[in-house]
Length: 632
Image 1: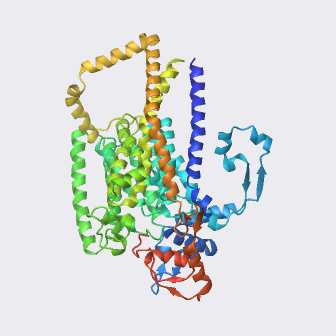
Image 2: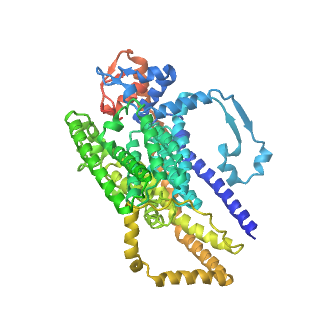
Image 3: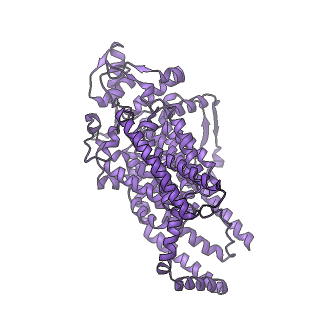
């Protein structure tokens, strides 16, 4: 019977893989509305600069790209593009374009008799409605238009893997992927044509967090810290929001130390992540020495230094001929940290006087100042830098945010230390999104993750009860646990538990739990059917009460995706007769400038239109959306 249980579990896992593939496909398709209506057109303002930069990279190569000084923007000053851009999206887009250029043209049409035998609902879910497949090289414009939709599917997959790692539940991960595929907080920057940094950055952020969580699953998992560092390089090269991920991981590592979870595995995981990631990030010209000079990146550096001191203290303790007791080691570390803190304070004071540290950026200041008065008029004038409202949360997160709040109750029983990352991510993302509506995008992954917890944890329990009717649950494998350390926070928490434990969890509760376990084993023929019936009741009640909410959320996401599909240089409207027409006056106007003005013309316009003037009209602009402070 145990074999039958394993076969059923494997079959269920295959079903989950199929559903995951559907979620990724859904993430891709919901973002194609703009392509279906307007064609393959770059959207809005910033994406036109990104596309122009991608064209330059594809035509001139890396070396000229990173030394490119653009005299067509911010006339007459110009702009050094190579040192003021996060080039990750441009680089990966050119790679994809070059790879697709080697694909031969291929078309295959499915015979009608075969297509007619396939259920209609299944055929419609297949690419091109199951009519056939085709492959061919794509233009650079088409690649840049499709990159956001492609990476939305990638982000959905990485959200699945991240949630699986954090929750230890593939069911929770599947539901999280389903939410992430369509949640407006992610769609807002990943519609096809929305060729902006965040479209690629979200997937890299999820990858970094997944690798970090994987690297601390067990003390022996630390080699995954190398992959976390490499993923962080990709994130840093893609979007300036990499600082959020860097400090979030540093905060998580620091909290693990406070909770007494420090181990050699944690030390190696964070050291490798920070060391490899920082060295790689510093190779990005726009970042340079910022990880060692920028005030907003000092927390991660401070955690790295503290970890090195802790490891040196442990190394000193292990090399002593006579074992060093817990209290002696505790006071030894206190003295070491006090001395180092004194020296560090003196060094920091001198560096401050020398002007070594870089000031906080305007957008970073906006996260901690009242309203949006950052001191930069250009930043303060942008609507997306305003604080978020309740209406914004309703639009971008929908009903999923309520389920996410419930999910906070289900993220504490897992064995992995990464479980604390969920709560920290939620708190930090909520604070940041409150201050700046643009950062609602970082709420997309965590709301999706937390929304999957209640469904996944409860769903796994129900499935286990049904499988228990076939066979008892197999014994869990032994967990690799680091030996308890003495002389640190772990000792403090164990001491507190020895004193307060009997009051919080008296022996009567332990006896009651033991009696419950014994009764389950001895009266299994009664216990298992009752649990299976309860599982059926829970699923039925959940389906009955949650069906309308799920339909409402899906309908809301579809409606928002349609709203986000307008490229702004074109829009769809209806005539009095009811006929739908596309108004492309903006696009035609830019094309007129391109075709009817001298090439050395300078166009004066409000800064919003600067990128479109240089990107579409191919003319020099007076100002554009770059804030000239390395924060594009």
